[in-house]
Amino acid sequence: MHKYTYLINGVYLLTETPRPNLKEVDLPCNIFKDHISIITSYIRWSDDGQTIGHSLHIQESEIVARAKKEGFKIVVSFIEEAKSAYHIPAQKRIQMQNMKNFILNNENVSAVIFYEESRVTRLIEDFVLYVLGPIKEVRPNFKVYSTKIDGEWKENNPYVQARLSFAHEESVEKSRRAYDYHTSVVNSSTPERPGSRNPYGYSLTTKDNTIETNENKSICHSYLLFIQLRL
Image 1 (cartoon, helix red, strand yellow):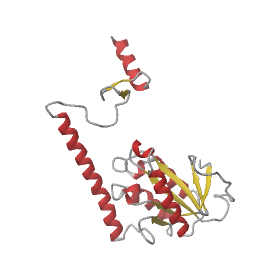
Image 2: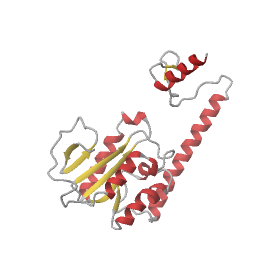
Image 3: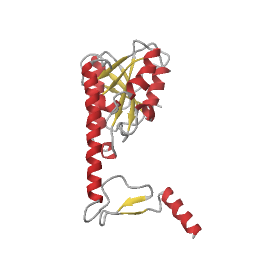
Image 4: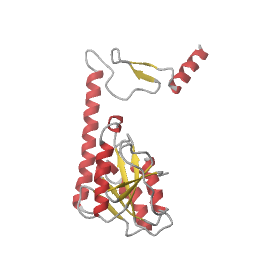
């Protein structure tokens, strides 16, 4: 699964996707058979706009630097692109589950690292209960690191709990503002379609910022065909 390997400041980074700005290298060991200490990293961002932005580079750079500081030479990366941690809990995110399974099936993995709390959860307890909990049942000494906290990240630390609560409240507030905006636009004297993702089967036009059907979208095309047959 992790077919790309890069050497960054003495740390080997294993990824599923290529890094055009880095040169590939050979990994000098077998991450399953050799007795080595491995740390996994979890990276996430919320929307498509950040996919083409700098979110990956920023998170990845700080994670690799912190992993090196903690003495790890191999980082296996799991990246969740354009997935909301507020609407999709940790236990339902594909890459989070892939990482959990990887950890449980590789005894060499002794820790996980992330950029900061909001990358793993916006719901306070889901990551701790459904991802970290089952791992620590098998590996009581399993460690967790955040690039924003010195030392280990511990779920029972009051400071960590405060940061988790803040990440949750931030998402609640963003959701409330988005709902208020949509309501005001729809209920205005000149109603418009509020800004959001396009419905399946539709594309945003460049003419007047409206949406129109797209026959290349399979869901839309199948639905239109169904209507035509009914008529």
